[in-house]
Amino acid sequence: MVVEKAIDIIKKLDGAVDVQELSKDDRKTLIEIESHHNNDIIPVVNKGLNECLTREFCLVLLKTEDFRIPSEPTVLLVTDSGRILGQELISPEDKKKYAHNDNVVFLSNNFIIFKPDKLSRSMGEKELFILPAIPFQELNDVLTIKDVVSCSPSTLGDKYLKEKYNYPDDPHLATIIVAFSKKEE
Image (cartoon, rainbow, N blue to C red; front, side, top):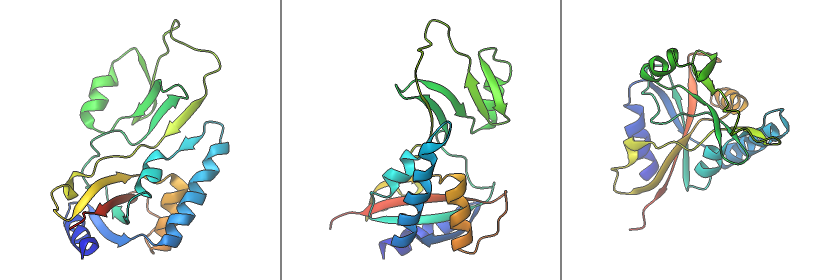
């Protein structure tokens, strides 16, 4: 009942194409897929997925570009000491804010790197791409749901989910995982 309620709410959102409950096998496969990024030149750590998978229920949402923008960046470049080196720009306002800022370098249209301050640079720091957990406020007011969180799977995780749930391999479509637990009655 609680899963059906969440699916009904999410399906009504602009840009939502489909919502399915993630199976236990898919959870295991996603953990395996995401663990392969630990050996990359700059490792990708999907903290958001790890947090989502601690919840009782996980849904996979297929969305278009019409879906609302996230409330926070979904990709960060950080050092192992926690210093933020770069981030995704999630809104047109962010892009305008940094467009003429001499303290950033655009790696792409929507990702910037902060120019390092020579004094704050620590040698030997490792760099990591972090995919953090992101709030998913649309389910916060459902009385039977608690601990709502969402995340973006990595590129390989997104590809796996599209194939598994028969979604087209279209760059204008993306998957999000929305997770939550049921409140005790």
